[in-house]
Length: 370
Image 1: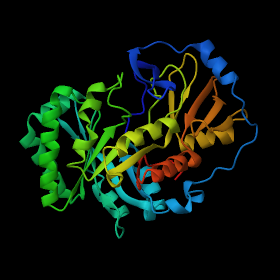
Image 2 (image 1 turned 180 degrees about the vertical axis):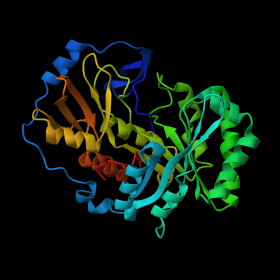
Image 3 (image 1 turned 120 degrees about the horizontal axis):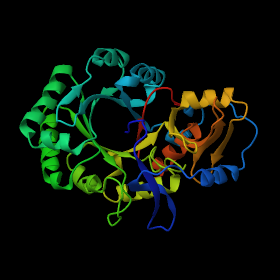
Image 4 (image 1 turned 30 degrees about the horizontal axis):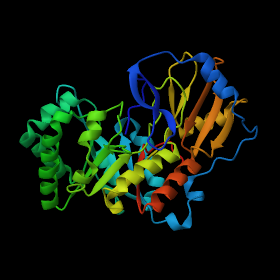
């Protein structure tokens, strides 16, 4: 999961153990994009001049992967679009996770439960489970709750009882290394109480592809996210396998290059039974322009750009297995970036199936190519 806004850090290359490199996970002081480098990069790409007809994932998903179970996050700010996507794909979804709770910097919890009845009505008479997400993007706010553990766990369990949720999804994206043991105490006790109620615990984790990598971004969180240990308590581990090149990067790059996704899955299945894993798949795109803020767009916006812009050029990268687009906005600014289209999604579902993983989770439902 992620927030779609520009952040004040830049992302530069990191050399992987396998010998290839991309733009990712090295946090440094923000620098403006290198105009000449980006222009040279985009100018050297050979784009086809013909458009392809927009298709949906369901039109191209392979027969052997028809049993893959879909899961999806819906932020409350995109509720209507998310529920529309869910409505159109009810037969494929096993769970839906609206982001109903967000831990604030001061430890307070923002509740967004007004939409619960609307969500329940959408999944009524289906087998889709409602498993809301509790998100935290600030380690201080999370720490306050972890060190008031009985109160915090009781609050979460009261919400499950009050609204009849089928479980909980914990999405803690920044955690101090010093809080590792209290974090595991938290999920151990919470898991036990949920099991007593016939409910499940899902835990969303950052992507990892090695234990001896100097992760430049969220290294403490990655150390806390011990997949093997989490699997002792969680019924599903959701891996955020995207934002390899983030919105804060000074240069364009693939959001989830397929070779990297394969490394993440190789690491994961060697520590967790594949039946417990869910591969996170992005349904958005990032677009860069020299001297401009990076733009985050959903599939509907990107499709409109392709349809309306006379000089929008599209191609599908066989190397990264991601769609890419070069377009010019109404102010004459050129943007280049990568995004997720049906072919992008299919490639990741196929890869997950190769590893015996039959669950995929999408960020985010709404205006998507499903």
